[in-house]
Length: 140
Image 1 (tube, one colour):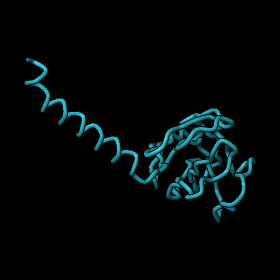
Image 2 (cartoon, one colour; image 1 turned 45 degrees about the horizontal axis):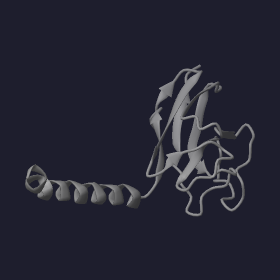
Image 3 (cartoon, helix red, strand yellow; image 1 turned 60 degrees about the vertical axis):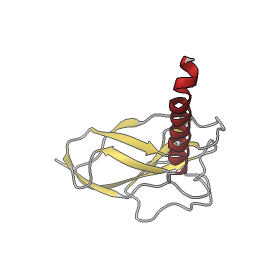
């Protein structure tokens, strides 16, 4: 008898849960900086925290749908070739372990930072998931 009384509420909860799940999955993935913020004046070493929505984080080498790992682009004038794996050098930092923050030693002056999500093979996704570029100033 109790189940019969609760049936409409259970159906409503199930429907709401399904709609919420599909809304979350339908959201456009985005990667962004939690900190520092654009225009921040900071001291070195700089703590950089990465945010991701609409996808999950998975380490390099682990192939899972709707996941990737962060790459930090430092002081690049142009975006890398998005049809190729992301380089690994002083301007392209890989976080293949699934890390969501790092500490950087940066020289005093102005620097640009941008995030690019890569798949399990360090390739940008078919529809690239890239943050806006931010500019920070490191105090002397």
